[in-house]
Image (cartoon, rainbow, N blue to C red):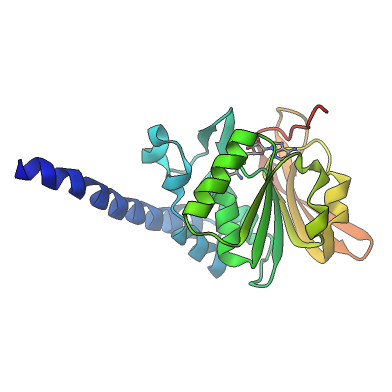
Length: 227
Ligand code: SAH
């Protein structure tokens, strides 16, 4: 009797510690071990409990060096990609950020650990609603989740210091360029549907946009509302 009682309350506590250890290892091996050096990004990656954003059946792989399924045929990016895309935005504590493709809400949480506020849009209602509940239950008060087509951005909250698109588009949506602040940065995977895409960094200087290719990537496709 005593054993089973102990086992019931003991197991989750051990698991939490284990996840914290796995998270530390993820940061040192997969991030610092590569080219992630921005302190704020590393701290955010060490803080956000990635295992709470993935389905129960893949939780044991939450800190592995790979993307994971999150339901509705969507995926949460590999930790390195989350950190890389975050680092490239050069976020400051006062920044207002727009994310397109909320998915699980994990990337939004990482951004919200660094920036002042995060506005994130998800086209699949089930994903958007569960991410909103999850982030609320976790105590994030600086993230707003909207269900809809991110192509149009979030005009009421524009302009944004930084914009991150976490689904692969064929072209950069014009409304997103318009909603980027002067001096702002956008990171977005661009390329053919279902093919290898280029992760692009776009920097705004007045009416001009400077574009550079960062690396070849694979992302789930950017979809559009039919209506
Ligand atoms: N950033 C997410 C993972 C994103 S996967 C995370 O941290 O978990 C890409 C997401 O973009 C998917 O959930 C997909 O449904 C969403 N998406 C695709 N096209 C979209 C669009 N036009 N507007 C908003 N979200 C979109």
